[in-house]
Length: 542
Image (cartoon, rainbow, N blue to C red):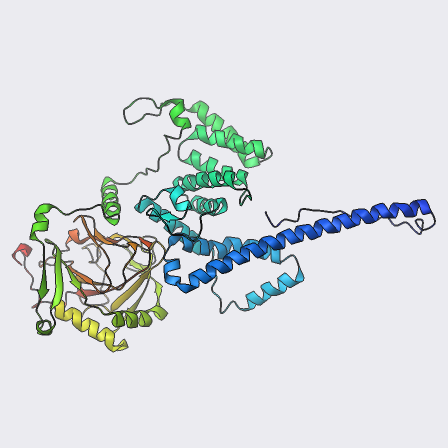
């Protein structure tokens, strides 16, 4: 490590028992002793000065970035690379700094002072670091982001991060992927760490440490020959590395036992050259075809690659809606029909900046990690496929909330008395919600049982912020993407008039690539809608 003391002096004291002063010859040897002592102290001073100079440079850079971030925290933290670097700095890098500062009493006193402020300071932990690293992987996959470009701080071809990633930054992303069993991303980031480490004049991570992770992940991805090659490189640097010695034997035996040809798409043998080049490495997993198809559609729509058919486009329209409430006769709503069968509406300018600010202010202190309902138990729990924080607001909490509830009823014509409270959500780094239904399916018998208001008949979704990149609401089976626009709202029915769930309304919230995403939604239930949206066995009749 850069902070290591470079001079180590062992002083062996041999008492003279008064023998030195009795001879000028012996006294002259003291000059040599004094010279060695001086050089040792000078070496120690130099090492300490180098350590302090490095600390000064680091702190200067931290202050520069901190000042820049403080001018616009939302914009700064809206960049996922900046967010990752901040969390890493307050976890991994801070742990290194604590080690340095613990070397003397002054540093220990300052650390104790920080510890005493624990109630006022928020420190991220290893779970936060894992979460932000996983979010970067998610963004990388969903938006087809190139590893090298990300490491340069580029997103969508633009330089947006405050600095490039070092080899150590890339190494940590690879390490986090490794710890979660994601060997595909471990390989991507360890390879990038390797390239950057070789170019660095001041090495930020040890070359052998990278090789250790990279070799095993390469093996786990099926490329035994390349794993053996990397392991041999590791052993050349660290001949006594026990785990590498064991792996080398294992890989050699595995290669000897490998008799089955590795076939390419055309059925021909790939051969040794192809294996050496890494063509056999794949991230494919054994999952159902239906899930794969939905996943591909979801990611394509998140990237904006979906298009509705020309036939459907001809049937879509924009208009001013003057009903069903009399209030809309005075103040009609700008409406766009973005899909038919099922019909999905976008209402524009239905939430003002003032209302958004008040709702955010009310919701933020009550934020908790968003939950999902367990399919089997019916209990609410957190899940990796839904990353955001949310809270719930009642009409009596504020007149603005009451007004918003009333406005939803006026626009949709539905009864709000049995609707759920207004849910407000803020999506974090790479925040998303994978494809899901808002309604309860037949097998989910206990869903909403405690409410006693039936199933969720409809969803009304407010967009409370623009999103610089990503964050769309997508419908994989409709080939439809809805892009957040501040003050607008989306509305659709989750149930057919027969009461059966409309499976085409399966939708998802795409990961936020750059920026921040605020939404609020109202889930409207069946009870109380009997005369507002009558049931019908033939739902095509209504």
